Length: 169
Image (cartoon, rainbow, N blue to C red; front, side, top):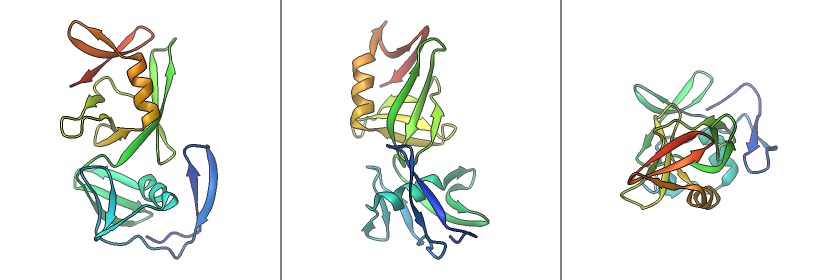
């Protein structure tokens, strides 16, 4: 994936820019997101955090599937598991709103049907990207959810002001 200039990465944990990605860097073919959320290209794990943020920030979901998009270039991605991680929840009790901070540096509102407990992994997950992608909760986000969750009529909910967000189990 080539762009016209260097790309600046946003560090989601600190909210600051990190080093630039050079224009000559090309995304490799055969990228996959495994059922456990790990990213791979071929048989190799993608573990370099700035590279992961760069890829995740360009991951889009369309009717035809998931793609890394940079300008006019599109590289298909096979997504079998959660492609993102929720690093934090931002709660507005007065408005009853929740924003989820993702590990690509973005934030988005939490939909009413977004929270669930994965039957396969036993971990909490959240639907993101208009409900087209999954994000696993980080340890901090997981602990916040557990500290606030309530049981109501046999269901578990995340209370935020007057709003009650159900957790699918």
